[in-house]
Length: 93
Image (cartoon, rainbow, N blue to C red; front, side, top):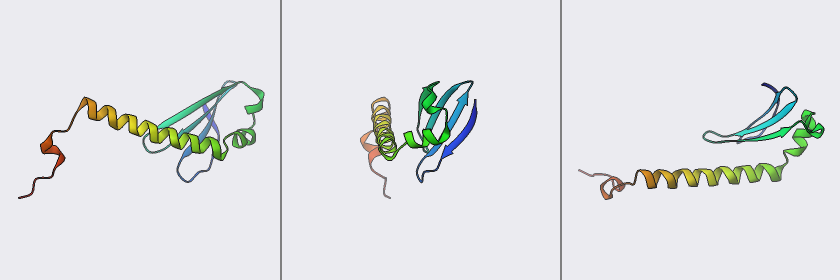
């Protein structure tokens, strides 16, 4: 797998990968990542076409997915390791 391009974005790192003839696009922030495997579709064999595909609407949906992932992560953490009443409030001396 090698990086064949990147898409600049202020909040995300967006990398375009090629493995053999297959193309993947990975969107990352500090905690989460989402990858689209675009396969061997000839429409996605050009970096400029992938940049057109990754439009603002797609990026907004990905950012929304990351927010949902964060909410799910926090809820799962709370279920697995619930905070006691004592942990909710700072001890003041």
